[in-house]
Image (tube, rainbow, N blue to C red; front, side, top):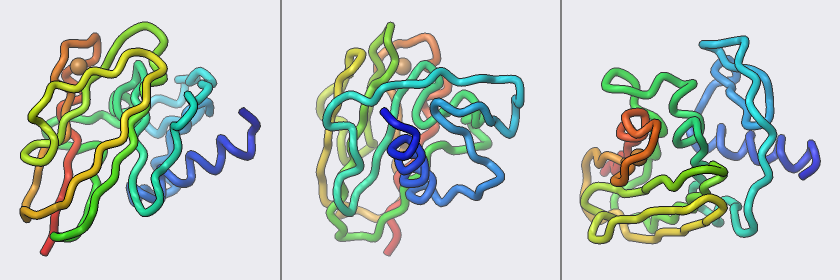
Length: 159
Ligand SMILES: [Cu+2]
């Protein structure tokens, strides 16, 4: 993948998450606001790993959901956070660019009837209507080496 498309992807992800430029962590880049020495590997996105129109893109890697580990995701820092309004059609594409292990993807209340597990290179798109207002954790339901960092995503459905 060329530099332009990678930059575009990063900007899309940042835009979706409402991240300020000061907290930029690039996949394939070198910057982390919390650990400047971290050099992230360049990753090749699997086919179909694109933000759905009007929706959201989450990239799983050995660093979690959109770099959860480097962002310090935990009880005091939810990551990533997706905000939608009640009644909205929600589409989330999730890609696993981790080369060695599977990661899971669930959204409380909305998308947790089946245990989802994405093997390396796999892409999953989920769609649902945000019928219920509130905060719904986004989490991994299968054990992985960074499991604890993948329990603090959040879907916020506002009225
Ligand atoms: Cu896990």
